[in-house]
Image: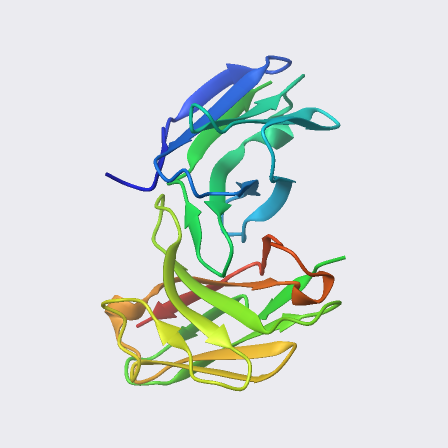
Length: 110
Length: 118
């Protein structure tokens, strides 16, 4: 079983829709959680970083962590064509090792 | 803040050539940097963890003599692909953590280097 599971999609939504991206994990020791956005032929860009259960909001983005269910989500409100990218979840615990999901490809159609 | 610069962004060279890729943390110090490889439409594959002033830690299956890593300062790590062959063609991405602020900081990524070996 992989440490982190993420549906690769692809996911296609109309502009203005609410997007929900999800990851599940198996290791209850994970303490902090990240979402990255990666455009084609670019490095991943950090969107959200959280280390507790609950919600964290930043503009149109909301990260949600449910440690009891080992489940994290990223919500994008009022999605825009510029949000079209691959979204990677990542998580880790004390130390340098990080675990990445495989990424979900998102297309927002104008 | 937390900007990571990677250079070059794209390199094309002949088989047998050695290629050096630089990764710099521009506004923070990074005792640890990471090197990843990414194939088209696939996720990141960690190749090695680069530690300032000591030897890199390579992941299983990664040839340390093929992929030489040097982390000589708190802001610079280099990856050298020695005697590159077409199968080494890939997208290489580095990342770094801001150790100075303490705690468990996220990784910040460079923009990647597209390596094409003819």
